[in-house]
Image (cartoon, rainbow, N blue to C red):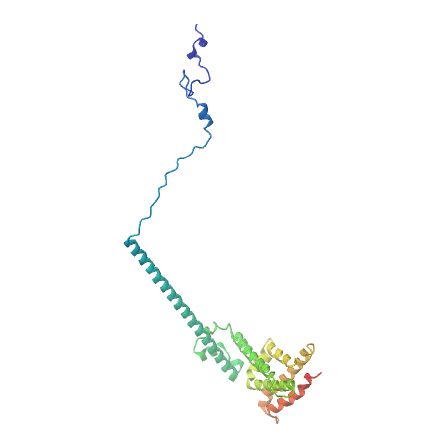
Length: 278
């Protein structure tokens, strides 16, 4: 019996032979040494060739389309500007109309308040006076209290302005401080007598004291030390307030031989003059 080791092709060598790994007996291809070493390396991809584009000259049709597009854009921009201007003008007209209507509402409320008092000032009555429904007034004032608060603020500003003007010195007038106090007393009493409903609302029915009026009275006492001004200003206000209520309530009712308003104001100023001195 012939041994397999004696016949080479019956017992092939386990290692491949040949330059490319092709076994002479079995025909099995195994990687060559160089191929196995390069197997893990990334392969470079071939880059596509870049073609250089040469810009073509613009033809007359393309130029015409560009000009038409620019013209349409200009027209649209002009229309947008006109729309914005029209919208702005419309907003200004609405704002002016609203401001004018608010002044008409306030003027109607002032007239009702000055002639008939606080009870006559209702949103329905004011709306009827200006020719609008009372629902329109809610765009300006939430309720009657808000409308009256606006009237109180106007009254306070009016009276405090008069008191501030009384402090303006008069040229070539002696005793400027005493003269300013006398002018302030006259202004206070005259305003209260001319606006009885406003004075009542501001001084008797308002929850908050008129701070601007109090500040104007304190300014009249500027020559006095700062620590003394509050008490003296409150004393001055008490005298003015009592005299104003007499002008509003008692003097119109008669029953006494009342002196004139200017005479009473001068006498009250002389009485209050001591508040200016130490």
